[in-house]
Length: 142
Image 1 (cartoon, rainbow, N blue to C red):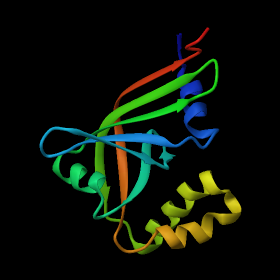
Image 2: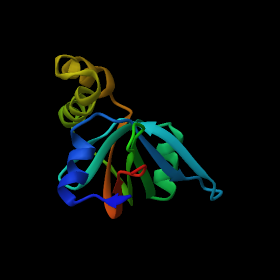
Image 3: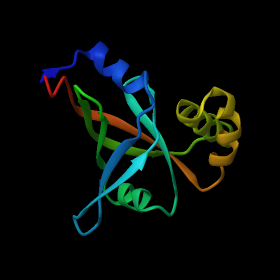
Image 4: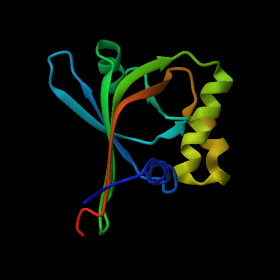
């Protein structure tokens, strides 16, 4: 196992659209993990979630999150981002733009606008995660 360089970490996070797993803390202290699509804005991770989701309720209660992104193919790699999540208050245009940017990574640029309009509706929250710790390892099976 080797640590990724910062350049390798950024490439791992951005070059392939991998579904992340986002862990939040329930009010009773129990963890909750859910898959998310994400994009990056500088060093921050961005994702959306419905305002009535467990993730949203948990982030409102406790902003500490951990996000894991992994490559399930040999030689295996992973990134864990620990940080604080912030619920943003974007304009409708910003919410649609972010929803489209995120969806475009996963569904393709040709479908980004349609998914942005579908997913960027009132009630959909935009979340920014500011990393406080990053663990990035590669070549786990070598």
